[in-house]
Image 1 (cartoon, rainbow, N blue to C red):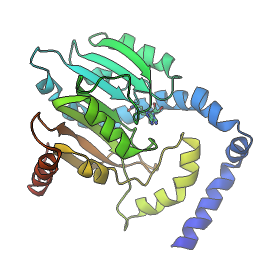
Image 2 (image 1 turned 180 degrees about the vertical axis):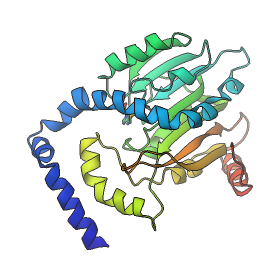
Image 3 (image 1 turned 45 degrees about the vertical axis):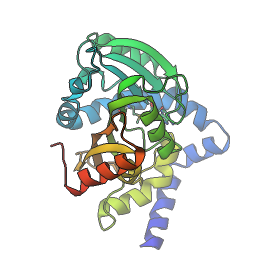
Image 4 (image 1 turned 90 degrees about the vertical axis):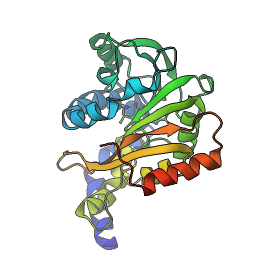
Length: 270
Ligand SMILES: C[S@@+](CC[C@H](N)C(=O)[O-])C[C@H]1O[C@@H](n2cnc3c(N)ncnc32)[C@H](O)[C@@H]1O
């Protein structure tokens, strides 16, 4: 198994040799961030969107439940990219977009023009691991789709999401994850892993993201594993759901205890 993975990895690396050379010369990363990745994400989003539309509609359906007592819904998106999620946000929702890469402006503007039912507050160039421009407890909802595969520090990002969420606010996610270890999909992910990471701006195929979500201090975790039909790609296995920030007064220990209980009870959103 190990030898065959190494063999096929080498074959794939050979096919992608020009990119490895550009990377060695320090040309690929800036080109990828400025031109290739924004272009790719805008077009990939359209395909992913078609395949995941139902799941996203279902996921975001209860967003209005997290409005603050004043009736406002303040939403912060980590890794907004080209704004593929705007269409699912309720009218009047106040959105703060954040991304570590500021080069998505064109796609983002197109998406904003298409989705004028949403109120765009600001765009911050910021890593999910460091949202210091955003005050603690200031947003009702944090959204993160197809981002936790790329962040440098997943626990740090979840910690920041918890910090900026008001008590009782929710963290929504849809992420591709590692496949079952006994499956061909896992074998395929192992082969693609290094080249994929290089080509797609640090995207890791083999993260067990649900484990980090389970260990974060959310009071309730609603999580489902599902497969999104993206044939021939190594990113079919996904997780989707939302997690709730402990209401004020609950200690972090209580939150962790409640979270375990919810999962043991098999609490599911769908
Ligand atoms: C695959 S795209 C997903 C974009 C969008 N969320 C969607 O669902 O179409 C990943 C996005 O995460 C951003 N990203 C990667 N690492 C990040 C980090 N540490 N903090 C914030 N954004 C990050 C990338 O710049 C990119 O916009």
